[in-house]
Image 1 (cartoon, rainbow, N blue to C red):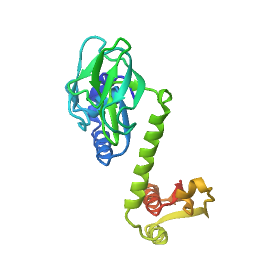
Image 2: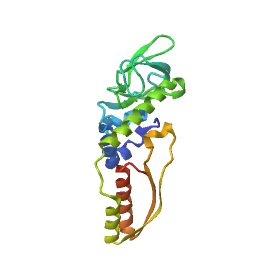
Image 3: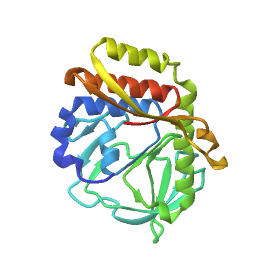
Length: 232
């Protein structure tokens, strides 16, 4: 999203866990749209504060509005949101700039002025321009398809998990009680065939406070690995 990360740059830089987790997610090719402030956060620095560092470049204050106004974005390559040549309406509104603003789209103003912008890959859109999906719903369809493919890849590559019963027995052995509230099969329509037959498990972990969260997460992870849709 947007906002003004330069106003909270020190606090953002101090949150090392979030910086690490976001970089790890991006390295796993999690589909991501990072506009303006979100783009700045993914670069190496905002001012003198270190950011995620997933993208090259440092953000700096220009002291004035930079590339302000409405534009049409046109893709120079296939990417997360569209194929080469795809276009969408957008706008820029920012005082800060980046030493590496990207060049995978071309921004064009109504008067004809153009400039390169945006870092775009098969899993990422990151740059200063803000766009709205309603300007071109094909971008939304393309993004949704990429997200679906990513999810399906995770399911295919997920390691096998021990039987759920073994994990529940481990919980009991370590003094954590649990209750299985519901276990049933989901009824699906033909359009939901990707989820057909997946088990819905609704459970509650309780008992020792210092242990219940750990085991709840372990059970959730095991159920998800087994392809279940889980409600805690």
